[in-house]
Structures are given as C-alpha cells and as structure tokens.
Length: 420
Image (cartoon, rainbow, N blue to C red; front, top):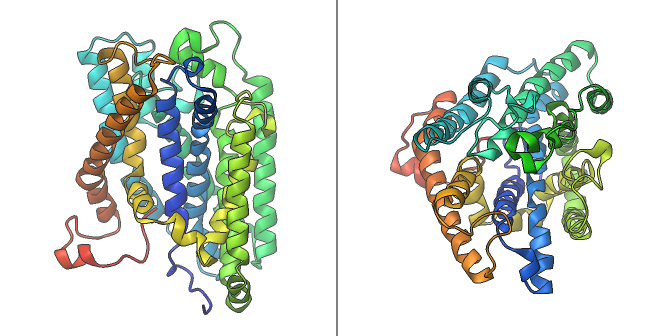
C-alpha cells in the first residue's frame, strides 16, 4: 500500500460501526418489552446486554465528529484554505432535514388523528422544527410518539460547533502543525468538560415530578443535565480527534504499510472491539450513570474511545475492515438514518394500539416477543428503504450537484466511498 491519498480512500469500518450503532439502539428498544424476570437465567443475561444497546447513540456522535471533521483536518494539514462553510451547511441540511421533517410531521399528524394528549405541544413542535428541543426538559422529546428524535437536536448543535472551532484553529495557526491542532482539540474537549460541570451545577432540574413514572417530560427531567448538548459534544470531539490522527497516519504511508503487513492494525481493532464488548458485559447490571465521566451516558468517554481505535485501525487492517463492512452492514449503514427515525414509531403504535401486553416488560413468551420484534424490524427496514430512496437520496444528490436519478450503469458501478 503506497501513501494513501487524502480524500480518495474509503474509510473501511465506518459502515460497520454505523450499522452496529443503529441495530444496537433498535435492539435496546425492542428488548425493553420482554419480561426479564420470567425468562431463563441465561436469557436474562442476554437481555441485560441488549438493554445497553442505547450506547449506540454515542457511536453516532463519534462517527459524525470523525467523518464531518475529515475535510477540515485534510485542508488544515495540507495547508489548504478553510473548506466552504456554505457547502458544509447545504450538505448537512440536505442529509438531515428531509427525512427528519417527514418523520416528525407524520408523528405530529398521528398525535392529532389519534387525539393523544400532549403537554407543551406547540413549544415542542416549534423547537423540534428548529432543532432546538434539546435545551430544556419540557421540549427534550419533540415528539410524543417518536422518542429517539431527541438526539437530532444534539447532533445539529454539534454540527454547528465543530466548524466554529475549526475556524478558530485556522485563524490562530500561522504555522500549521499536527501537534498544535491536536493540543487545540484536547483543549476544546477540556473546555466542554468544564462547561458541562457548570451546567450540572447551575441547570440541574428540581426533583418535583422528576422520573420516568411521570411520562416523557418527567423522564427528560431525570435525564437532564446528564444528557445535554454541550456534554454530547464531548462524544463528538472524540471523533474529531480520531479524524486528525487518521489523516496524520495517512501521510505516513511507508511506515503504516509495514505495520499493516505485521497485522498490528487488525490486532488493535480486534482488541478494542473485545474491550468494548467486555465493558458492556461488565456493566449489564449497573445503573445508567455508574461508569462514566461527569455522569454522562453511554460509558463516556471509554466506550467512544474504544470505537475510535476501531475507526483508526480498520482502514489499514487486513481483515477487520472487511469484516465490519460486510454486505449486510453496508446496506444497513446506507439506510441507518431512516431506521433510526422510524423504528420507534412502529414500536409505540403497536404498544398503544396493537398488542395489549406489548409494553415495558410486558411480553412473557420469548418466542412471541421474537416474532413481534422481527415484524417490527421488517417494517422498519422497508420504511427506511423508502425513506432513503424516495426522500433522502434525492436531496443528498442535489446537495452534491448530482442528478436525482442515476443511470443503470452508474447504479451498478462499485462505489469507492459513501456520503456522510
């Protein structure tokens, strides 16, 4: 392998990690419906692991920070001008807004048609449409029926912060160097931790009606401030730091090739995956915030860092990258946004209007639970495919100046990369 050309290599492993993140979140929500005390001991252990699948949300932020900062790092380390913020903004909007708005508006329509009572409806609707819902517990969940949409506001906040800090890095760096840039982002990471401490000190909600027994708003009040946009930029920043290290590695082709042939990248990636799995296993009976920095969710920052090592290792590996980017995972990664924004709507509609015992810890028969879960997965995949090809991809292609409909020859071509 000769020196890797920046911007031309496909980042092997990213699809696999995106698929793992997406499927683990879905399995987390599905496994909540199985009555754990009624299962065999071994199955209770498996369910305990599945219930920690919500940690996949951290991987989404890690991946976004990694992939979106890549062009900025490339420009910085090759002494090129600051990338076009207009292009960045248009592509982010085209990637997120169409699919999100359709899912959000369908959820609102269902709330209206089913006459579901909603507290703070207009406040939640306005903040949902403007991606500002994550700044207060009354609006944290913009949709009463589609809970996972909460994270989109956090993502958009991170999308805004990253180029602002990158712009500052470009301004203050008269002589650019990898070391200075890494130190800068380590300082940003520390700044986020300091700001997060102040948020905990000054903005922790009162204990009144705080808890999931008080519904979504009570649950949001319980989650905050452990869940807050500033804190989640810490997960995002780990991805940004990982991208910087990756590009520095790409510039050292000969040395990287020697290590690659020795299988060191495969060993590092496999070890990181094993440690991430071990962490989940060890934490399967612990509380949500028992192992984390500043009581952030998802085992912050260890879990994100371990998968950051996987991201660094996979593109240079002999085996790990190919295993992660298997055909099923690549397909799942392609439609992952649709899977994320639609799957829970099916779960909650079946819970409320479909199957009487399909509620939290309500299904006692594991085979029946498996059948319902499989049906939800199939519906989610079908909807996500429709969402991607009918709603998301036309806007993605438009944002890149591509035709909305590809020719047959183009569709059969082997892609060297994928949109982020």
